[in-house]
Amino acid sequence: WAAPSTMPNWIEGMKWESDLRIRAQQDRFPDGNFTPLQLGLVEDPIAISNTQENNDRYRVRLRIGVETKLSDMTTAGFRLATGSIANNPLSTNQTLGNNFDRYAIGVDRAYIKLHPTQWLTLSGGRIANPFFGTDLVWHPDLNFDGAVASLKRAFNSAASAYVTVGA
Image (tube, rainbow, N blue to C red):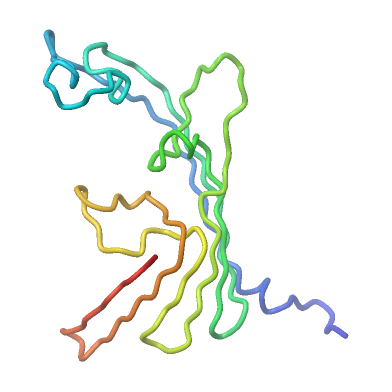
């Protein structure tokens, strides 16, 4: 049934990741700063709730995840993270000093990846950002729900091309 002192392949193929961050954050605004409502940028005064009051916060973030190789073509993974994903899909930070309340922890990622060929990857579930991003477009901490196909082809050591589509 099993060889002594051996583990199944899917357990040996596990890759764990985790990080813990504690930081101080200061939000400072100049005297006489306009609100987005005064500038006519938004109609809802709660859309951006604070542009005038300085704020000092101490924050913590914890993320724990695992990815495992199920077969030569298939990997699966999940990651748990602190923070209220319902209120802010980018931040997994939890503000300290919330009157002894427990921190919210949610499923940050849960996915399956198929690698039928060297140049094609199919992913589905709640996945890490598969698209090319910068500080202006597709923040690296943003996760997507759905399915993605990524095609990557290297022509030589200096030239390659890729296409990513998703729904």
